[in-house]
Length: 376
Image 1 (cartoon, helix red, strand yellow):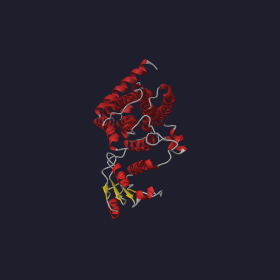
Image 2 (tube, helix red, strand yellow):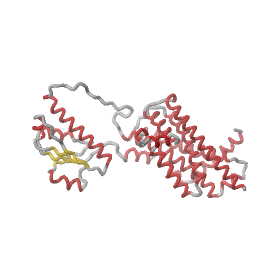
Image 3 (spheres, helix red, strand yellow):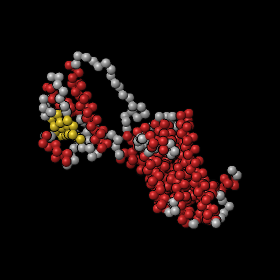
Image 4 (cartoon, rainbow, N blue to C red):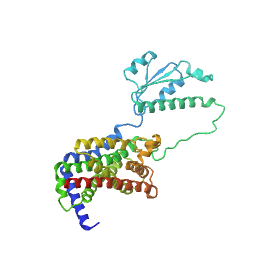
């Protein structure tokens, strides 16, 4: 690559940055995506149970039933309300309580007699995540109180005791996961939007033809858009990670931030190449918007960030091996959560680079074909 080519790429990139700085809407989108959007995504959707409304129908009125009621305390649950059995359907129909626990009469006496009495838990499952988590919490709390009550009367001790330790997120705090993954998702979204829109804007305004009559090549035009818009997104994700995630949300980063940013810079090349490729397919901004929606949603949902790849059907897993987001999410989680080094993530870096080259070459081929048709 000659010095003239590098100079042309640099000057065209500066032009792209000036165009971006003059677009207040895109600037506002970038700022919000790497600040308020990350904070809102991390704190707005709770991954844990918090102040869930719960009611108890205590038909036993025994010391054991009172122990179970007292164990349902904040911050997981609000103070339990004691209601009658006749009130269950009305209060749940009104949505006043998410959980209603029914303790039958003679529960403690039947338990002491060696019978197997049952507790009934009614769950309002309109909020699925809270219903699933809350039912597990109440089940474990009730089982723990019953086991503690029966412990002095037991003649045998269990052969084993299961102790669970959660690595990388000991308290299972959802904010740690939500903030980082939102930053990763916004890198994909903004890069594809910025580069694709910049390319199509040149075509709609007629400035692309002006560039083509200059001593510039399609490669130089594309490379300039990649580095300029990629730099803007890289600055944004650096701010998001070091300020919003680490300082505001107080999320500990286990690995090397520079290593992650190096991987992000490589991924920006791949994502920008996808954006240019979509820009060569679309003929207008509305078409580009539809293509971006059809592209970004699968990339974000099926990359392993929202759902583990192991939980997906095998054909979906195989298809997503051709997407750079799969490797970027894997790389980011390995570095930021588990403290992985270059010796662990280098295969992901290589895959991201290879996929980026494929999309860049494909976009360059389509761009050159369009230039040839225009010159005719």
